[in-house]
Image (tube, rainbow over all chains, first blue to last red; front, side):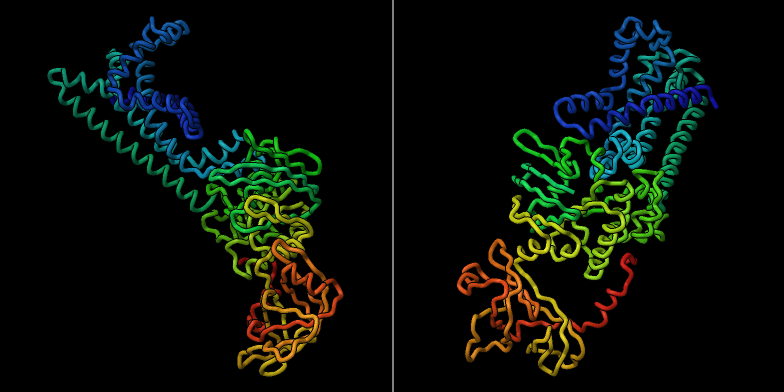
Amino acid sequence: MPHAVQLSLFVAALATLLSLPFAVLVAWWLERRSGRLRGLVQILVLLPLVLPPVVTGSLLLQLFAPRGALGGWLASIGLPVAFELTGAVVAAAVVGFPLFVLQLGQAFASIDPRLEEQACSLGLPPWRVFLRVSLPLAWPGLLAGATLAFARGLGEFGATIVLAGHVRGVTDTLPLAVHAALQTPGGEREVLVLCAWAVALAVLAALGFRALLARHRKRLEWGA
Amino acid sequence: MNFELDVDLARPGGFRLQLQARCESHALAVVGPSGAGKSTLLAALAGALRARRGERLSLRLDGRERAGAALHARRVGWVRQDPLLFPHLNVRRNLLFARPEADPAEVIDALALAPLLERAPRHLSGGEQRRVALGRALLADPELLLLDEPFSGLDALGRRRALGLLRELRERFGVPLVLVSHVPEDVVGLCDHALRLEAGRLVDQGDAVAVLRAGETNVDNHFRAQVLDAHTVDYDGVRLHLALPPDARGELRVACSAHDILLARTAPQAVSARNVFATTVAALHSTGGGVLVELARPRLLVTLTHSAVDELQLAPGVELVALLKATALVVLGSASSAVRHADAAPVAAKP
């Protein structure tokens, strides 16, 4: 497996895992709230979806640059972001986040709130109702969201190249490697290999998603 | 359980539930037409509704104020019209949802749930889902059971079984219950006290039988009568004329509306009514719109206006003549087959 593919898989997986708890909380919060604050948070969450990734990357760079609001502090605790692999992870997480939240939000919205009310009236405090009723019922949405965020992370280019730069052997994820190979004379073969890997990964992700979803459906059908 | 309720809640759509009630009851019926506020009252008791500005909610149960308690701290078994089983859990896990350590054996036995335990909720019939929901509520160890229309959607046989089952549960588990129904006959045998709501107000309360019978706008007499010949039956020692099916014999189920019976102090002359018989007043129940008169023999219910009762000077023990048109008596069917079968069927059998 080419190094760029390994790197991309690692970055996308880590970004998905790290954003998962936040996506769940934010999606849940958005679904059960109304009012101005909700609207504001919703716009903020959706921004990376509508902004050009390069713009998102530039904004992130402002925040995470060594002298940025967060970057300085993160660097001081040994976690520099800009022009590091962490930058690629942050970029992938941020651009994948809206997809994750949208999918989860739909899943939470489709749960009958009376089921949660019923669970609560059976004596479970709200956080246990969330873990035992809401989250299991939102499982397909969580899977779909994670798959989309992962796929988006795999393909992330614009924000990554701004925030993480193209540091050979450190931040050259699959799309960056393809971009570099395209500009290298005689790099056509490498481009083809990387493209084949990208297609294979996309198909695998889709198949994995389908398999997990089928398992969930079977569970609903037969009871567990 | 002692209930002290003081409720003033506005609901979306302009509906307002306003009532104050105090009663001591082990099985409280809340009856009234659709939209009277019965389910709203139940939801308030369950803890799903809170008083907002300008509203009032006080629910004292056995002297303890419960209105402020969180939904999960209420310890009420709230069984709604929709069973709301958790679709991702099988029946066993639904039953043990609240207390996984509970021993479900007795509840499974009482509700005949054993064959369903490993099944997914989506593969249960409506009646089965209700039984599971009831079992789930019982296994949460509630201090109070709240049942919202437990009979809706069930046919006559299903209602009979459900009623028998609830009666058995009341005796076996001893949990006080509040039962909402818009079909008051269903709860006559089950509840000891009743509240009647209409348009968000309490219009009557008291002994269940009196409240349930009194408020009925369409009280029917149901009885079994013995066929005497081609045109008459015997009911409670009185010979009644009616239109009989040609093959009628043995015991029949007969009904007539309480509105179709006339009462007179003396027997009228040359009257068209085919049934004229002497009887006595057993009891009088005042209702919203009139008076329900219980006759002693034959046992029949008659609805009258207040002015008619005053004019006839009716009181328990007064002797009267009752008049009933032959065409007002309806034969429901033979007393064998269906009804006998229902009586013999085990209470919790699969519907």
